[in-house]
Image (cartoon, one colour):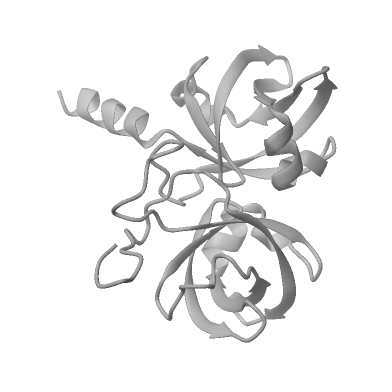
Length: 212
């Protein structure tokens, strides 16, 4: 803690969802949209300009409002590249504040920059967990490895399986009861679009190799 406040690294997240929020208003603008989202925990120490990840998308707080709400503007490019364009009033969303300097890195380094969207293909329940299969865009498949990290709607998850069919690539994640209960993935049926962010380290390694 610095000066009694939560010292934040704006734009850096861990993929550990802090709470399930709710979209309470959505205003369509000419080339953007303004969302009002309820999240009492993430707004408890938020201020104008702070970063909050909404379903894995790093958004900037425009205004902190009463009743644990905040507003954020989303430009057209972000709407087109993520599943945020599908959010409506009443939609549940995964929320995470920017990482704090004194906090543990419980997940992995997450930037809140969506690389693409996937679609939930199937769910396979087991006694103590549930395996969820998600379509993986072809241009992202090279960054995903079994037992590696991937962010799905802002949730840091471990890839438990990989594969490809004539319809395209896919990966699987195994969700424990806590993840099923406390995130939007718990109720994401087949056909649900999800935001994907691959491990940034993989992208840096590729870039360095290309430079050589």
